[in-house]
Image (cartoon, rainbow, N blue to C red; front, side, top):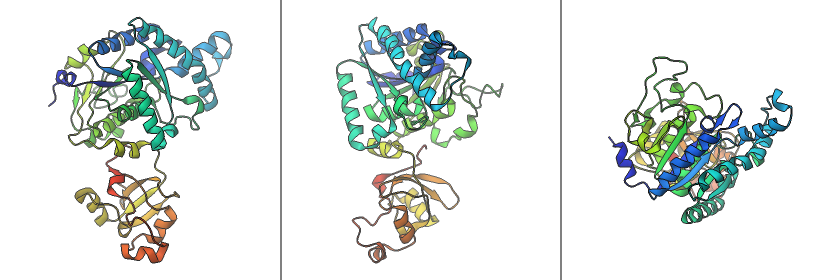
Length: 382
């Protein structure tokens, strides 16, 4: 088992995600909590660690600002346009508070707004990585949030836990810290089960049924413990440990990490996937599914093979060549995801066919694999 304190030995870069429940109240931003968070992160910087902060709170800050000046507090305004408008108002207020909080320690902050669409194209992803690298080189604290104002869906990443996990791959972090309102992970939802027990360590998150464990969300945020564990599972695939702990009250990061009774440490898997495979699996939502027969499933899972058309039993959805798709068994189990070399229409025509027959069915192709093994991630945490 990994000793918690030993994690600090080789930590160079840390992604810290803080949820709305930690830095907001029912009335808006909690300035004391933001100052306390800045104090903790500044202490990590003094030890030579580079920090990327993924922060929620813009929507709450925007609602606070507009409610102070209007009578709109009587309405909830939970629709997409209102959330985006509140985020547009609140981003400036949130960054102002962070800028002042970190300035007390002589640290400079930078606002980084991301959308999944912005990371969807590999070139843009690499551009974002270069920008983050330069900010960290300058000793700046990048503060990342989803660009809610221009998102075409209500929640493009789904939540900032997912965004935090994407940032791990973006900057090559060594540790993911998820600050929340709960003091770690419990074996059941403590709000609904008084007998729930704390889990100081999770050694094999891939084997956990996190959907059954997590049947609730926090009242302020959008993610809940399910999204935190899903993000931790993704971090584990990169070989990065996750520390889930309460950021409320008298929180002290170093003390909590060394303690055996604060928070939950998620141990990463032994064999990490490449950053490129991580990106291809999570840069977009799957556009459809390829259902494979038993022989193909075994070849993928046990032998590390590519997926050939002969092993395809069914195609679900309508998608183009290069789309991200689920790979499923005939029983409906998800084996993973991958980038398809053929459109859904082409796959329907060549499914179950031998490689030598493809040219006569759809013409000459540069690749005979439906999904190459280098372009798939099995056991993906979607």
